[in-house]
Length: 471
Ligand code: MN
Image (cartoon, rainbow, N blue to C red; front, side, top):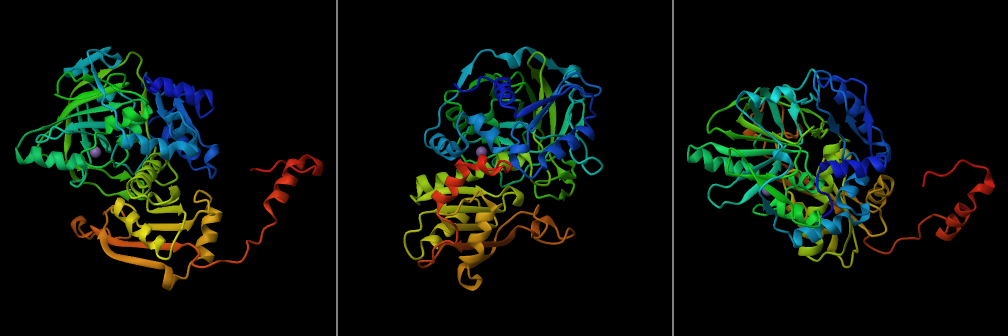
């Protein structure tokens, strides 16, 4: 087993300087989010880190934000080097591991019901002060079960604090949880839900990733954590949640009941409009002794949410394209600044048309969020924006190498789909762009000094009396 609980992961991050502590008092409703925003907006990913806010004004529970602020932190969560992340994910998707049920666990150290189950005692932050509809739970891993198949789903959905025992939740019908909720509503029954907060990293990683429908996220998460996750039965609903979670909220989503949810600052970089959405009636809260409240910062990229969702998206692309379809993939990059809209893929381009074949396969994997896919040769580093811009500049002729797919699936959160006053149901399709940025014939030699000469001067750099190079 890689990590037993969220606390072990935090220790590993802190030891590497990827998490720091703030002991000064901070206000959760504006200050905390603004501090974290300034850290996450720094242009170099290696300058970003997470924070344990030890002293949240009015509460005696610390808030942890930014545990996944960089790819380096994500790699720590998987116990691998950054360049090994996609292979580890592909192995886990190929060989999921069954979790185990245990009778007890730290999450049962405190069981609160009735008036004691009070969401208002938890320091739930506000992320876009003055614009969000209220405080939001952003790292709540919602466990639900399909009433027909019994298949479990774990997903991360935005949850708005609405009162002592009430929250609002955004459920999109096409999402796995949405499919399940439709079945409960058709039967006029409430949907039981258990929301786990503060889990081992692999549960957070799978909860934010669109693993294929019917694949149990907790089995993939077990494989990513190198062994079965321990699950404990909930107190008031027929569900299981991670036994070492910091906090679990148990409750029900009643059928056909709607209340205004939102606005919320979304990952596209724009405010999502409010609307009538389902509610959660919280019936029970279980938590560890001295619990922490972990949260994920989203909103305009770059963000922690984009690190988490971006790497998960890369992993899904990698698994489908390399493991399932046999493409000679080198690397895949979901470009953070584009908020999942653009994905660049490097591969061993082997025959005429190979890139177009790859691009056509790639756009089908995640047809809703991804808008542009770029294919490049294996000499291009897809994680280096300079390299990628260069490839698109001089290996592309727009009329020949770009293909558009009109009226493909899209989503109303994309403000370019249509004006705000156009009803959401009319904003479900959009265009896709496939860019073949590979060389179509032999090219002239690259205009750089030979690599060995560049390396030679680097080795004796001290001789020149210059500041050290960044890389
Ligand atoms: Mn799912």
